[in-house]
Image (tube, rainbow, N blue to C red; front, side, top):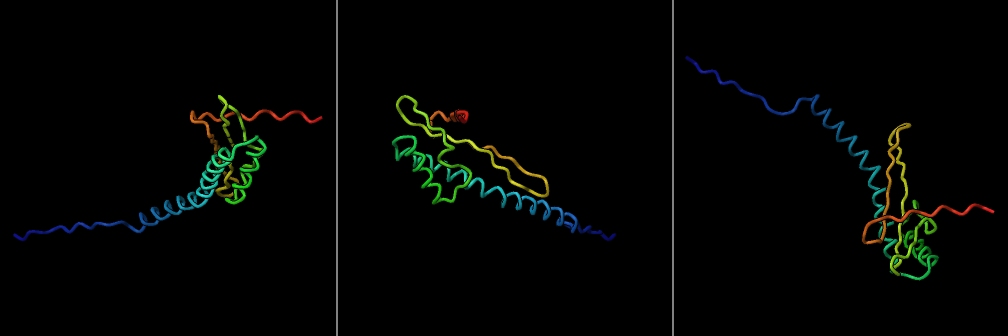
Length: 133
């Protein structure tokens, strides 16, 4: 009696390879569109820490933020958009903004970013602008 040895093939089929590459391609497109927004968010967090360290009046903090943000090419937040509060005699700087990232066609991804120098992590709400006179 001859023994038949069954050879089992292993590997990935062409269809499976195409599907895996398509999924990786979509993930790469998402990454290429989202990484710059996260990089900008990190630059804003660093800029508010430096602006707080510069100290002074709220206007001086805004100017210090604008200088640091200009160096890092930050366009999402300006110094006037910061919320500057004084808690227990210490100045705290906060920001919050929404970033809309177009993905394809009329499909967009909306990301809410917020940050603060407050150790509690609570982002202060921006006061409503005074009505124009």
